[in-house]
Length: 208
Image (cartoon, rainbow, N blue to C red; front, side, top):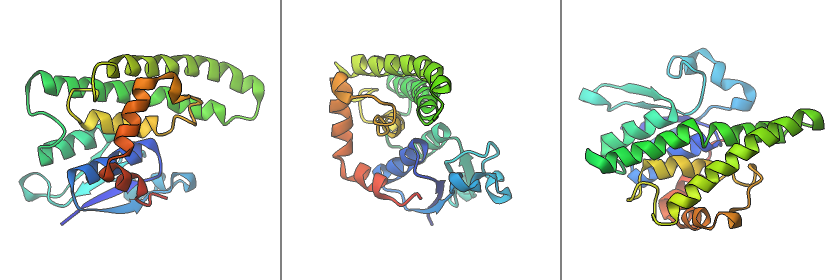
């Protein structure tokens, strides 16, 4: 039995393929081509009511029953609890992982995602305001991460799903128009994770 991953070649899709590889879980990929509106098809809507990738179906879910999970943060928590990996079971260490996971979900995802949008506009007047607004916040978030990683190897102590979540977005730093040399601790962390064989496999999976 394996997990079915519905995804595309985006930060949110990659964070799940990386996690699946790091956790050693068997899985199959079904590409949901968001450039062709596959995410709005009825079959996908049944497992992802918000019409967003990624989503998964685990045929061996709780009590042996199949389960579908949507939203990348929820998927990471589900997979971590299923395997007992990359998310402490209790205590302060668990809280720390969840803090940094929510940091990514609530900020370091939505903000650089807006940078992606406005950077792609061709009208300079439309582009100028959005880039100024969202680039300022994106750079602030990079600064928060750099400060954290100055005295932490990973965001929550040990390697965790929070790192996988954030990695998916740092991977796109060229599209954020961010030079990682300006954030040396983030750069060290990024290069360390990208050197991991399972992470490399997660990024090599065909998602488009």
